[in-house]
Image 1 (cartoon, rainbow, N blue to C red):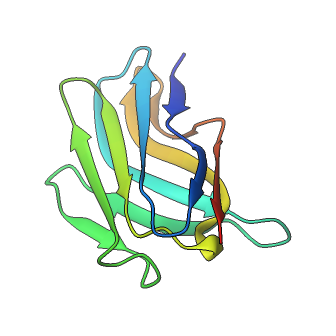
Image 2 (image 1 turned 135 degrees about the vertical axis):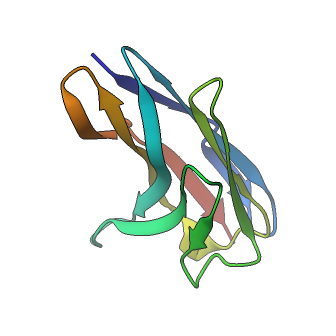
Length: 119
């Protein structure tokens, strides 16, 4: 069974920085896309950033130039460095992996970590 465990959320003032990490454990053969999504109260979950197996990245327009996604394939981890945080970045952040296991390709989600940016 694959599990994703997130860490690094918290409370920060506007303009500050946070670093989120997500580590996968279990019987993983290969991970294709790794990503971060977020969901603010009363809103739908939205994509924040993706990184593929070739380290190509994709960012939401609202975070471009402020957030950086990276991955460590040896450790099955993905990291989101968030700088110049704004109150509108407040949300629960979820990591997401598309991973190959003995049961085939599956989409896995972390439990979520709260990020709160105060003005």
